[in-house]
Amino acid sequence: SAARADDLPKLAEKPTYKVGFAQTESNNPWRLAQTQSMKDEAAKRGWQLVYTDANSSAAKQVADVDSMIAQHVDVIFLSPREEKPLIPAVMKAKKAGIPLFLIDRSVDANLAKPGRDYVSFIGSDFVEEGRRAGEWLIKATNGNAKIIELQGTSGSSPANDRKKGFMEAIAKTPGMQIVASQDGDFTRDKGRQVMETLLQAHPEATAVFAHNDEMVLGAITALEAAGRHPGKDITLVSIDGEKDGLQAIVDGKLGATVECNPRFGPGAFQAAADYAGGKKIPPIVVNKDHFYDKSNASESLAGSY
Ligand code: GYE
Image (tube, rainbow, N blue to C red):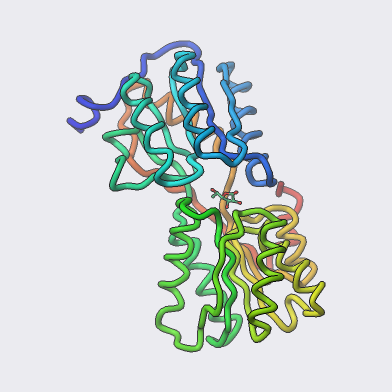
């Protein structure tokens, strides 16, 4: 489109590239699998990878992108921790003439647009993931549940959109009620702590919707410590499909998890190569996600992370 030709930085065709990957944190298996996938693909292609880890700080992540710009990387792959604080990073890369791809998480669409301010967003449809979790929970509970929701990092696109999709799914079923909802920052220990507190306030809870597996695993620990029986007297659903999540399904504690695939390397690097070759990159590239429950969790364990 004209917008691309006029506004977006170009990428020359070269035998090899120096690419930046600005990771948000490394405190869970999903993040580690994503980083590994990016490193593996860089090695496979013989491209140089400038890797940074923002250690759960949006401010550090902005500084990390600054340093990539200063190092004149050819391309930046950014997994923005939160939707608004990473806007400056996107805009500075554009101004510096470095094409940037958002991978896995997105930024506020009112403030920066794919195809105009950055090349493309590559990742899952988080609204759809939340919707699928909600639809599964309606079936599993016959449309009657008092739900505790453990939200992902506040201000992040997966937290915002998973909540949105879940709410849409349960909206037309009056028996589905969210009794409490709190930020567990996508981590296992925060999930455990938040669940412990919310359970004391809401012992009547019969279901948990966690925005990722790590938090649901923390919730299972809290529930068991409180004498509850996950999978028996309370129904749990989450998102990701990491190894420990699949194992919790096999163990009968977690009901289901919607896959969110962390293996971005091949698709992200190919998108950059295509972009250099002058191919038109769609502004949004949606990953296909599977779904895990007791019918397939066991056979999926071997390939998980
Ligand atoms: O679900 C979670 C991770 O951004 C989609 O972030 C990703 C989420 C993923 O920490 O486990």
